[in-house]
Image (cartoon, rainbow, N blue to C red; front, side):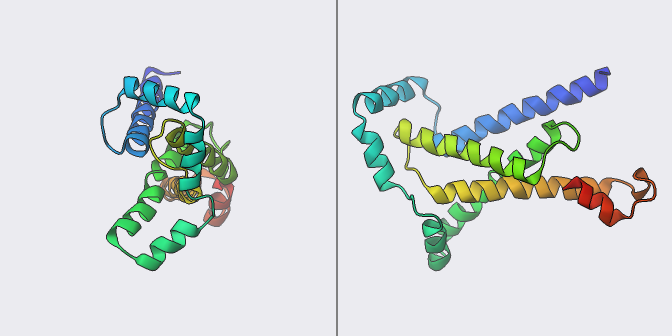
Length: 179
């Protein structure tokens, strides 16, 4: 690997690490300070008293589309910020997956599953550390955001790739191969 490519490779990985830290900070800590001692105390409390997990799950939303429908019905600044924020925060995730994946190896379905897995991990961590409640609609919205990031990256890549890069192929075929 050439020195320029190596620097680009590590720069992208470093940016992805910063993005993941920001994602944790926003979703788990609501922009607050990351306090490992506090997390440890919360984890010990949850392990000692498992009923906290049950209470957090009961307080959460396990009905798909319930909170999304409520947000669209209410149309308040808070509800729309929550709705679109949950999508927007995962758009970079879908883009980073494209950049970090081997050329052409990532699919839209692969992005969906990875976005869903990370979102599930974050929602579960909120319950485990008593930092929030589990909301199945967040899983849906985060996954949509990851897929939008995937599509935006592929579309941008397609728009910046000259048609001559794939000899004899019309642009529509080149785009289809990217998805």
